Length: 584
Image: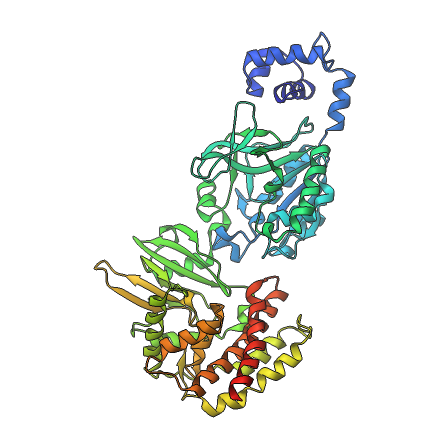
């Protein structure tokens, strides 16, 4: 049977046959296709002359009947800011009903009760589904570092005759059926420039370039056992390959320029993917989740109403925070929301004091609101801004000049940043766990032995940024073409030897020693004393261990920084050895 014949047979089995014209209307196929399909089904023995299903047809449909479903709900939902700070996207309410509950109810209507939900971010909020709906939860502990290919890998034993469903889909009409005769992948009749597939006349999903546009990919799929077996093998293979950590499960469907299963085309008005705050507002302007405390705070700070906030888009998730960009009264603003676990890492009252001290000194971005209790911060967006390129000599010279000018202001606050105390503080957050590095204690002893050298050649303490890394230097150009450099993200700032900032810039940039020496020379155009240079090497070793310990803490929270974490630990070991050689 081809797809059209399967559709017609399915309709005849599930609905009492009336006439071909009605079949054409319901199926969406032309009357000519319906007539040809019926003739072929009779020839192949699926229908008798009275157009009734035969035993062969009934056996075929029983073999391919849907038996289970996998709902993918582990993701953070990056584009759902600010809602995703309070609710996982599968529990967003549309017309008073959580998305995932609607999906489960629709599956039950189709006779499917074996339902697996892969959870990760805010997994505890899905626990009630076990009792209320009889689902089984599968926990994806790596949701922060891997995409949903890994989620489906965790559910790989449940893919035969199964629906695969993203949790952020709202379906007006039930997309699930008691009977399916073939595997399919659902797309919309809406053209989407970001889609990588397009439906051809044979209902195949052929790959296209992103610039040419294709059918919007909804993501709901149905897999028969024969196709599920292939997908399972690919999931096992791909999941073991780091190149696929950030890939969607759909990667397993592609072969020779098209998907291995045909398209099922839905009307764009019937099925909606909710990826952003704006899409939720468009679908249900009265949704409870539009009443965001964060938006109310932003609106109050800007002396407006939440409804005047529009064009909300996520900015790149930082290592400590996540932020979103929005328009309000013809101006763009950025709202910062502290990330997971930052309440233990950063003293927000101290951060607020820093911003009070540097205000109006041309050092930082324009702060419009900061809450010293929870760390929410609102800033005016700098148009035409870019970050420092750590491989651009001209950028580096300008950044080091700006950094030294800041240090020479000799600003003061009430708190101190102690690198060595912070190393032990981050270690204490491991809750008794041992380091993932086998020689950690030896490395720590070596790094701590450098304190005496640092103290001997330490500069007088001034307000120091601590996180003065390339991404925190913003180059902004005004309408007249004038360039200005601002330092952002002052969360860790405190009283310290200002030369620590040079070390931080180096290790974040993953510089080798030659690059480190070049940066030191840019900060000290008059020449850097050997003792100061060695002291900066000491700071590199200490800062490397500091951020390595920080990465270990974040790793326990499910956030893995990969190579960055490993390289920081290497700085601790390698620059200890460099200092030993230089001192001799």
